[in-house]
Amino acid sequence: MLASLMAATALLAQTPEEIIARMDRETDRFEAEGFSMVMEIKVSLLGSIATTVYSHGDKYKMTMVKDGTQFINWSDGMTSWEYDSGKNTITIENAKPGETSDAEDNAKMLDSVTKGYDVKLRKETAKTWEFRCTKSKDNTVKDDPKTMDLVVAKGTYLPVSLKAGKGIVSVILRDFALNVTEKDVTFDPSQYPNAKIIDKR
Image (cartoon, rainbow, N blue to C red):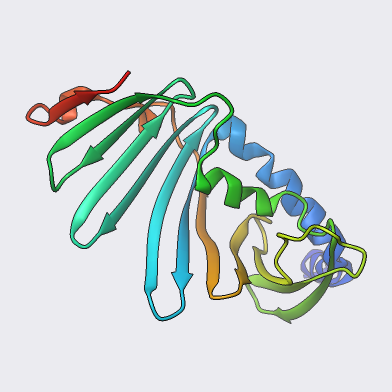
């Protein structure tokens, strides 16, 4: 009982900066262990679209469904493959050097979210901390959103969700999970034996 009380006291004593610093250390595991997340983009009056991202090292796989059609994109940094279920095609192209996906760019929002932001704890539940990150006055990066809402899981210190908005567009990163294997993100042609191959390399 005493140990439980001491643990609870330790949690209460943590500052927002300390909690997020611990989250940063946990998300450092993403590259080595592989991770997945859902990236949801919402546009006012136009609705939203969600993409599930799986990443392991330099490889990634992204899946989405739009108007009943499934799209899957794989990349190993050198080659990209895109499956279109409506056309039943696999399009193969050379990846552009240094090019990053929207998912990778948005995931960078997690990299030390306290940099350039003032962080306040808005709400605490039995399972999570909920923070509001407000752009600092000395943050001169034009493209940085004015506010971001971050939720961190107690126990694991992994992010639960991160929401940022600018104008009519908002981006939500959610449903983070570890342990994505290389096989999970590697294109396997045997899974699409009847698809038409369009090789643009």
